[in-house]
Amino acid sequence: MLYKENFLVIENVILKDLVEVYQTPFYVYSKKSIEDKIKILKSVFSSIDNSFIAYSVKAESNISLLKIMIENGVGADVVSLGEIRRFIKAGGKASDIVFSGVGKKESDIIYALKASIKQFNVESIPEALRINNLALSLNVRAKYSFRINPNIDAHTHKKITTGTHGDKFGISVQTLKENIDLIKSLSNIDFIGLSMHIGSQIMSADVYMNAVNIVKELISYLKENGINIDTLDIGGGYGIDYTRKDNGFDFDSFKTNVIPILKDLKLNIITEPGRFIIGDAGMLITRIEYIKKEWGKTYLILDAGMNNYMRTAIYDARNQIKPLIIKSDNTMKVDIAGPICESTDFFAYDREINYVDEGDYIAIFDTGAYGASMSNTYNSHTLCEQVLVSENKHKLIRSRQTFDDLIKNEINLQDHFLDNTYKENL
Ligand code: LLP
Image (cartoon, rainbow, N blue to C red; front, side, top):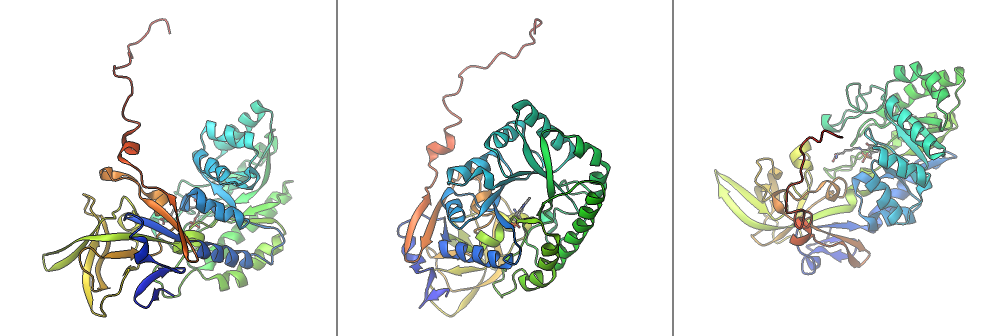
């Protein structure tokens, strides 16, 4: 239920009550929504003997939210030392971490090797060599998969497609085949499987079916060449319905057409969902600072901008936007913009919205994924609060950054320049 009488709610909390406690803009998340999504995913994969959900931490990395994932038996897909440390800080086990990413730094690899993570998803031959050398020097062993780029168009926004040749991600089937001897020669890392991630906000199961079929052939090829693997990581990417018209990712077709192929492979299956778990659990609550009428248009100018939620500005995303209180059935047609000094700082164009006044509050829906995690301090706005709701309770899970936080790394540094003249003896 979206509204209780005319008040927008999240679980059993009336959002208008929260704007009296927290300062806008702020993100608010529903615990139940996260847990329900994890249950759905577990049931989708339940017919596979060994399946593992590694939540993609980049979608939203707040430690309290990660704790919910961990309590619900979910591991982590990470792409940096920071994400590894967040997951462990939240109480997660290193042995539940899958480490993806095209640019793993030496220091990050060393940390992951020492922590004994579950596996590295390796994205290039030089990366495999680097991890092997580091494992050798630390005298440890590690497990890894190669991320295959199957050259499949995920039919999603071009800026979030990752599985076609020319994208920077993964290696081609051809490259893997050419490196069988190298794989066999790496002394300190064990090649245990293949991984892939073909894109984000995918709606059709066919894309996964095509990709899994390519990988299936490759698994047979590896077997013929003396390499047996036990793990396949199919990545994340399951889309959500930002239009809220019941058109999310087609899990029915996924269960009919993809799960049986995965089952037949008799491997450990990993999936790395981000958006599907957290996307529609979160809303951005913001105040209408001004209603500006100009050029025959009406602009709602908010206190949230692309610094808080940049998906509209960079991917042309369209989120549902609704007032916290419905004051009238009458609607108005508005453009909805933030305070940032950029022409792309918009949340909606020509949108019908229930009548609102200056000083009212509105909610930007489905901003849980790639919302707070991609936010920044452009125009020197501080990072906003995050609030968690469970049933009829709410709590602060990130406080607003202060001005002092914002500038603390810029002051009290050396007050003189360091000498960088060429030293002949070096
Ligand atoms: N695994 C890997 C290796 C990934 O790169 C990603 C996302 C995921 C899993 C999780 O994908 P998901 O299930 O959330 O679709 N900022 C963009 C999305 C970028 C996704 C990057 N990789 C957006 O806001 O749409």
